[in-house]
Image (cartoon, rainbow, N blue to C red):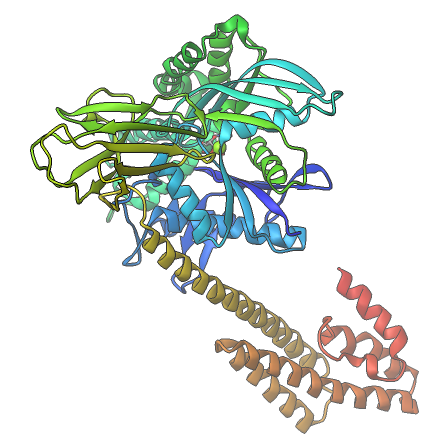
Amino acid sequence: MPKAVGIDLGTTNSCVAAVIAGDPTVIHNAEGGRVTPSIVHFSKTGEVLVGEPAKRQAILSPDRTVRSVKRLMGQRTTAITVDGRDYTPEQISARILEKLARDAATYLGEPVKQAVITVPAYFDDAQRTATKHAGEIAGLEVLRIINEPTAAALAYGHKQQKMEGTILVYDLGGGTFDVTIMDVEIDKAKTEERDYYEVRSTAGDTHLGGDDIDQALIDFLADQFQKEHGVDLRQDRQALQRLKEAAEKAKIELSSALQTNINLPFLYVPEGGSPLHLEMTLTRAQLEELARPIVERTRPIVLRAMEDAKVGPGDISEVILVGGQTRMPMVQQLVRELTGKEPRRDINPDEVVAVGAAIQAAVLTQEMKDMVLLDVTPLSLGVETLGDVMDVLIPRNTTIPTRVSRIYTTASDYQPSVEIHVLQGERPRASQNRSLGRFQLTGIPPAPRGMPRIEVTFDIDANGILNVTAEDKGTGKKQDITITGSSSLSPDEVQRMVQEAEAHRQEDERFRRLAQARNEADALAYQLEKTINDLRDKLSESERQSLEAKVKELREASQGDDEQAIRRKIDEVNQAFSEVSRRLYEAASAGVGSQAAEGTTGQPGPGYAGGRGPGPAAGPGGDVIDAEFEAEDEK
Ligand code: ADP
Ligand code: MG
């Protein structure tokens, strides 16, 4: 059965893992990294780069590079424009997911079609739905959307033999903050019992993370620079990009060092003036002063989660830190202060979420023993009622899946339809909450106000995704619901994007194969030119000319975009060379003398054999030489 993987689709970094022979394993990407930067670059040639290669392009062409797209998930109206083309956040995220799935397939040696994808626990319905759509656009069957802190807890629990208690997961990444408190009961000795995880509360902020600390530092540096030179670096995209990277690097260094140097030579060249450099020393204390207001924003959120779970510091048995930003000593200090506990140090904050997702994937595909996992909905769900009031159907921290129905009625006589405005959030006033969509229930038979009985049902599935239905109890008929102004893509839109992506995957695959062929052709042409030159005095004039012509044709073919034509040329060239080389070997073994024979061994062979095509192995004495070539190839 093909593998289902677990994917941590992060704001800054993403990570993919799978359970291999019972072991949750982090999969390294094509570049050899265990995490993949969540960055997508659209190159001028139409190639789309993802991850490390995209990150490398960020400085040179920031306007073609999309980062932190997760911050935009669930914002329907936000288009990301690159090169005059609009992309939805779902489409950009799908590019990242595609790469992770592709790299995982290469690693596992089998196709990857199913995935569990994680989201911040505090993601609302629109953000979850958008993530699910991104997975579908990437050609994946999304087995489940699970919360990042919950995944972290699963990964932690997997390693425990026995534990019973309450754990707190504090997850501060690049763009989001989550805190989750859960009860865990594990006893591996009792094989008939399932591991038990029950989330008691969750809270967070989907727009709070390390990026904000970077921004504070960037502003600080740019302000300094402006004071000194009267130039605002924020107005210059390239300078700003360099500043950004330097700020993040300094921030990371200050997690272990007490001071660091920021050095950005030639950061700005004023018209007609001499280049300006940025050079300064930053101390951990300075960074902490800038970061404090941001880190402090997590305090009331943790306190609220503790209050919702009805736990005090003494009730927490383990604290797990997730997210790169938790490596900052000041963050750890705050967590210690709030929980009265020393956080676990044996957990890799960059990988633990993907590992947990992989475990959940293995459970769902019955590769691993089932467990009891009870998660909650992070935010209250309800409908708008008369007077801008939010009527809550499902309060926050309700265990999911869940289903709640409530009867509503009309506000005026003979009202033929009602609008059901679905909301998510904690504010009593409807207009201050997030609008998930509006549903029109039409065709209500004429009746005095207050008479019709309309049953609205909210259904939250195991993904934390809401489905709403409405039924006119008077007619007994389930009415059609039309949705307008929704914050998610419609099924039609998703379908269209799935098809587009399928087409570009084929196109990308074609492009990759073409690039591969070009690469081989260029390397071969280069080698052969060298060989022709090396063999100058052994080749006849006509041989040389004909070989040169072949190499020229090869070079020309590699400029074109017909992969098959390039492959044909590669074969032709190899053929032509092997004929010439056969003649050279025959001449050599026909007793031209030992000197010449030595010369041939050393020269024509390694010069162009290069591991491809029908090499001179066909020639006499091929055995020994062949062995040499192979050794050469290994390097
Ligand atoms: P996400 O889950 O949002 O993708 P990550 O968990 O990868 O994020 O965390 C990325 C954030 O962590 C970035 O803001 C990065 O600068 C920060 N970070 C990574 N390593 C460190 C470190 N050693 N010290 C402080 N911050 C760090
Ligand atoms: Mg993360």
